[in-house]
Length: 127
Image 1 (cartoon, rainbow, N blue to C red):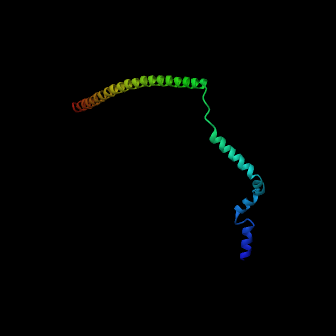
Image 2 (image 1 turned 45 degrees about the vertical axis):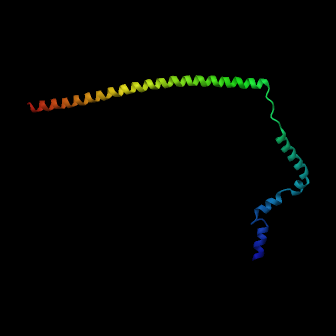
Image 3 (image 1 turned 120 degrees about the vertical axis):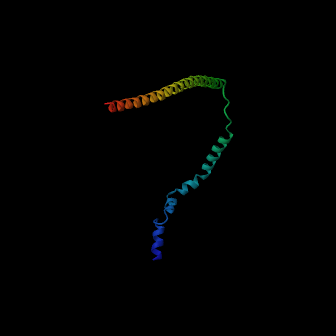
């Protein structure tokens, strides 16, 4: 029984990574290993040794122009926010006035309702 189970495992049923290792062309990789290492070393040295490129005067001027444009846009945005906050303050004040008026109107409406109920009651009893 053990021999059939172990042979099934070796056939790829139990060890799928063994099949993956068999599918890799190891002879080609080992034959090209020196050139792969040279390419990797060259790439690594280029990455480390590459000096930062010096910016030209035009690039610096273009960046300065962009910064100036962004600062101008920030100033305009700040002015807009100031105007909006002033308008919100004015609207808040107007809403507070309207709220006070509605409260007084509610008091007057309740008083008028009470008076009309009393007048109706008096009219009914006076007959």
